[in-house]
Amino acid sequence: MAVRYVRTVVSDETAKEIRAFVEERDWSQFHTPENLAKSISIEAAELLECYQWDADADVVRVREELADVVTYSFMLADRLGLDLDEIVLAKLAKTREKYPVELSKGRSTKYDAL
Image (spheres, helix red, strand yellow):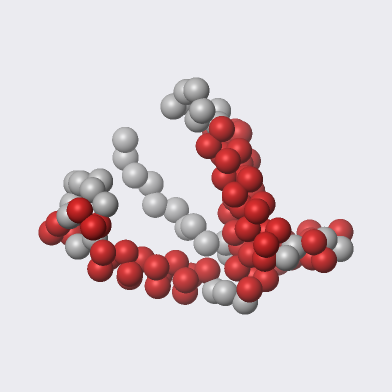
């Protein structure tokens, strides 16, 4: 299966749409970091449920659940004042150190067992 690379962090336009959606409904009062973290976990479980009994999940459901995970993740980062590009790139740099190419290429071994 070929890997397709797509933009993974929401655009400014999408961020504005999410913020407007929440503001129109006066929902930010419910969006504490704790509640948003719980929502991410719940939506991630619903995404996993798509694959519960079959590796060939319904793509429409996967898209919807993945959108929920991404939306809540954006909302949590936004609430905490975190820049998603910055935190993802910082984590990627740390992970690169834990999984050097020469030790980890083609292997799924955890970093402490490489």
